[in-house]
Length: 173
Image (cartoon, rainbow, N blue to C red; front, side, top):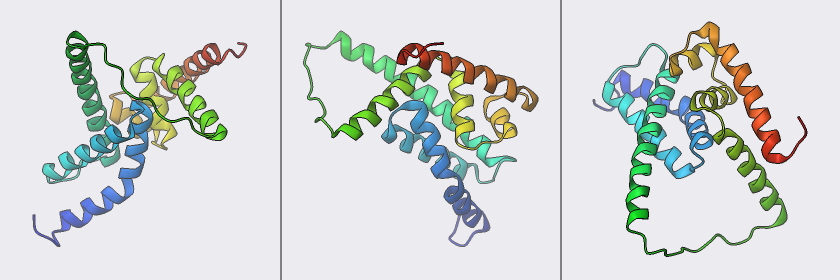
């Protein structure tokens, strides 16, 4: 495609409109901002290679990015098994201690991520996509759900998250 091609212009607008939200979704889902940036970028590369926009670009990108994350986790688990099998027990450095506010914020993020990790994958995806402002229609398309059932999935996922967070945080039911 040449510069000035109508698809290039539309693609650039789609990238500017959707990359930040897709990145935040993947960052929250994975807990790894570098991985989230790589996966969001790869989703856009695939969109560009496709050469045309799907009917619902935002949902298509979320679905592709979710598949990329699933593939990465599968590969990471495989790599971890190989590393552990060949590990000499070496310990690597730890992060420096942060000021009080940063520590409290980091602890809150850790608790939220821990609670999210207790949920089934679909519940995490529904919650995080909604948090990023995806519509019920977009969530349905991204996750292969009927739009009419997204609200039910979302309500169930919210209850499961609140229960998991309460258990982890020690809050009463």
